[in-house]
Image 1: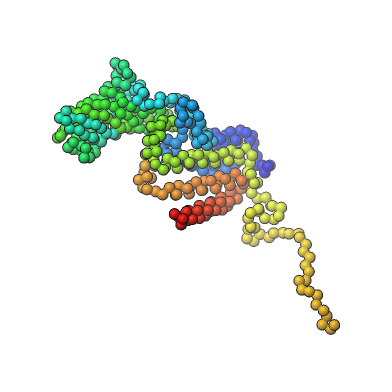
Image 2: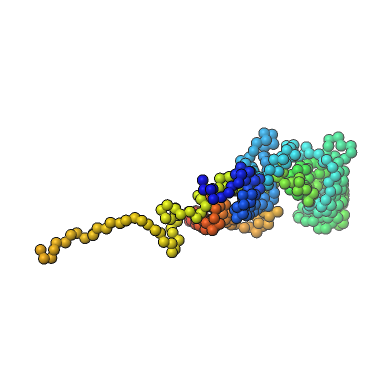
Length: 319
Length: 65
């Protein structure tokens, strides 16, 4: 072991610190260059992957029934403190299999971005509109089936395509909400919260009228960091993440896995010291294995060489 | 967060390998040696070797495709 020149202090404690916070074990040993190098490389790789994956790539397990580790999480957890919350979040979440079974537990309000789908006007017209505005909902008091809600959405028609039934952009919308069809779990890796509910109300202005429709979309920025960091995805969320992020979802996963695996090397370095040596040892054969001597280096050798003339013995010219 | 912007920019995913080459080279060689100069020198060599290998592989695949 080449660690005699390095004070590893308590190697087990150093390894534990290096696992919990990349770089901390080496800082404890006073190996500051390595502490900074490991910390910068591993944390930047980790958070680059986390941000690239929209915070959805770090989760404890996908199989809620069997509670198994995924191989990916086994690599991620080598980063320690950054990945550990995922285990706790899975215990907190325990979501049912179907989002339609999730009831609204309290008031939910915020900016809303979504669509009015399957719009039926009282005069028989049909339509589909993108809408933006403010949504306020809360559980209904006479909630027999746990999905009756009260509340309202006020906003404007945002985008109109050929299915717009003649309604212009910017037309005011005011509808009451009465039934929750599906709701994203409370603990979920996104700051927005998706929902789908049935509504009745009115679109004002030219070509407007009374309507009944489905309101589907996201209430923006309503989920706290505590409810989203390391939270598990359900099957529907995983499918949506793949759809939204495309190839970057896989790249983000690979970044977080590699961060974990690199920290595994760093943990061993904290425990055992560098594998090949300090780096300035004089090799026995006078050169570093696998590399030529630096220019200007004098390589001393003590090999004695006996040379014989390559020429055959010539007879004397005089005979 | 970040991915939709990158998707919109239609950035080639191959560029995402470069940061990984840098970090893997640095961390791997830091576990081999202790001297900063030695670590940096070896990391540079390893990084270039990886890039050359990947570039060669990419060229071969490109020519075969």
